[in-house]
Every structure is written in C-alpha cells, then in structure tokens.
Length: 118
Image 1 (spheres, rainbow, N blue to C red):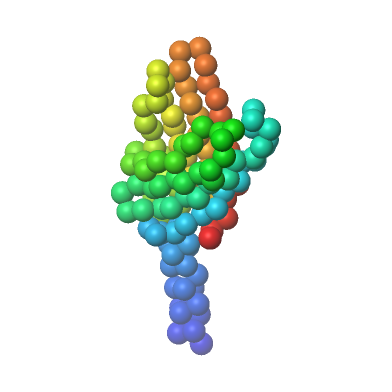
Image 2: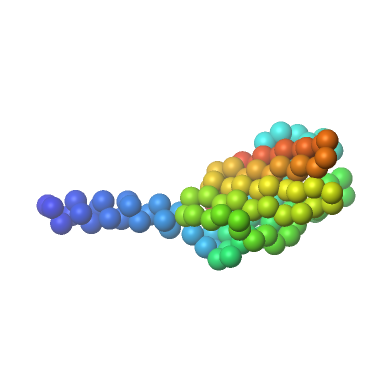
C-alpha cells in the first residue's frame, strides 16, 4: 500500500513539470476586443531557450509573430523583454494567461490572452 501511495504521489508531483515543458504549444485568444474591433488569436510555442508567437493573419492587426528569448523561465512561467520602436515590450506567460505590455515615453498599451494547451 505504501508503494502505491508513493507511486501516485510521484506521478502527481512530476505531472506539473510535464504540463509546462519545452515543446508545449498553446492557443491563446485576446481577453477583450481590441481597438480594431476583434479578439486576436495567437499560437504560443514554448521552446528551450525562448518561445515563438504566431499570430492569425488579419489585415486589421499589427502582426506580432516573432521568436523571443527568455529573461526568466521556470516550469510554471516565463518573462521576456525586447526593444520595440521607442520603447520596450514586457511579455509574461503562466500557462493560462499570456500578457504583453508596451511602454514608451508617455504611452503604454497592455494586452492579455487566455490560453489553452493545444
């Protein structure tokens, strides 16, 4: 009985690691309708040293498809920062929500996406 308990607990503990590992793909939908009047959809691919964003093609949207390197990465979340125009974009992902914040002198814009594992 103790062996079965140990086995079940071990599977549960290591299943969390498997949920958010390298190679997982997520489908994400913008939480609110954006300035273009639609909810953007993206594919997020979690890679070893970074992640890839692929945006659904739409002429009303700025294409944010790109590959990003991690600033911080764990089994549960990641953060990245990159230069964009006159400011910076800060991205975060926690397996459920992908967020990006653009900040420049006197201007900021925040977007969140609800994500599900593909």
